[in-house]
Length: 295
Ligand code: GLU
Image (cartoon, rainbow, N blue to C red):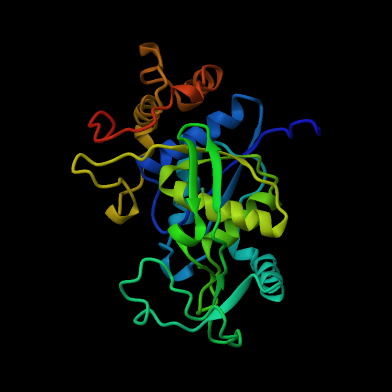
């Protein structure tokens, strides 16, 4: 057996909005999990979809991470610079017959939760078409460090999914597996909203011969009304002057028990304590409708 690879983690924000409290919790978990074992922590801007990008969001996200003491290693990588790698993978999957061109319009697919496979055997040319990956009627399962075993049958639960949109933009599922492998990521720590994307990513990793990282999906924070705390709320950026208070709140949301003396401490001091005392096993499986962590 080969020796375990040294830990490399990452935070991969999409600049469609500012960093909100939910994404701070995800960033913090991934940072602490890496630093607690002396690992590297990389930053990747998932700027795949320019029309949905919020002007200024990239800079604001980076500035917020910095003021909150979440310093990353190496340069910021941007998915907007990685199109050649994505295109090569799409070409390869098409050439192997593992993907196909799909001409179905949104209207045609209205009301269908799972793609019915209309274009599977139509041999459309790839111009002016989306590219879909053919999925097998097979279960893809993995062991999540917080959520436990998670499995999906790709044909039944997901269906043939898009890896390149008709307008040419590459899909998150494709880009994320290529970039995690390219950056040598050993551990993916992210929000549980991506739990049900993971089996698709495992399948792509298998097809492309890429290593499979370990996964830890942290529970989603819900608003008191049951809604996910997220970008749809157009959350304002996290205020720099509230860094100590927000970090403490985020640590508590992750089941960590920062001592009272840390109240009001500088972010770096707080993070030094958190790295030394990080307990991934204390992360709650589910935060439910807890009001403790929302403003
Ligand atoms: N870019 C994704 C987001 O901001 C995260 C992707 C990932 O961690 O795999 O929700």
